Amino acid sequence: MLTVNDIKKVYDSGDQALKGLSMEVSGNEIVSIIGPSGAGKSTLIRCINRLTEPSSGEVWLGDTEITALSSKELRKARRDMGLIHQEFNLVERLTVMENVLSGRLGYMSTLDAFRRNFDSEDIAKARAVLRRVGLEGVENDRADELSGGQRQRVGIARAVIQRPKILLVDEPTSALDPETSIEVMDLLTEIAREDDIPVLINIHEVDLATEYADRVVGLSDGELVFEGDADELDERAKDIIYRDGQSREERDAAKAEQQASAGE
Ligand SMILES: Nc1ncnc2c1ncn2[C@@H]1O[C@H](COP(=O)(O)OP(=O)(O)OP(=O)(O)O)[C@@H](O)[C@H]1O
Image (cartoon, rainbow, N blue to C red; front, top):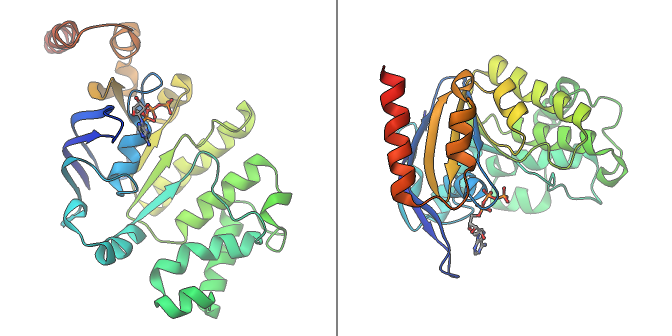
């Protein structure tokens, strides 16, 4: 289970990207984070694995307080958090196989990792994962020879081979066409169910968010302003998440109203 407790992030620029946000993700649920541009969605994903250091608050993965770990401990703990990026983040000149194997680096000694000394077991695992994501036959192609959808599958395979306890997914479809986006979302859903791990997805497209998510978290201006099942994301909820220029007081009043009507 992932627990985020009162996370705040103030960037050096003074931008308050997260203003005390708490949430949980557990089981094999798929949770979509939605919200307008600048709401803090990417910051939240990145604060969870501390690619961005939160200014305050706690992140727990199971019994481990991620926010309390030294950098050495964090390297180990990051094995448990598979990260899938918007722009795939592949090493373009390396092959598909080499990119996927880099998901095992966190399990190797520093020297073996430096020399990229992968053992035969890792290579067998990589082949199996590549089959699973539908990339058999392109193992030896360079990453930059692939289509966008294939590249995202490599990114997913690299995260899955870590054997993570959670997948953190940052805008997985924004560089993809609609058809490929659906394929990628189908694959992420399949992995959550088969590997029995939760998936937290920052996603722009509300339609995809509701279609695939068990639960939706809405952010607005660094605050969690909606949390509910995908079918509870009605026009009113969307209004709360996407309404521009609303003051904090107005938002709080709207939130109280929403909670009151939910309790009716
Ligand atoms: N590295 C950074 N340095 C300074 N400010 C930042 C940085 N990254 C994000 N911000 C600011 O923090 C706020 C939240 O940004 P974030 O990228 O998390 O939002 P987002 O909801 O993911 O937006 P988008 O959907 O456009 O990617 C914005 O005001 C943004 O300008």
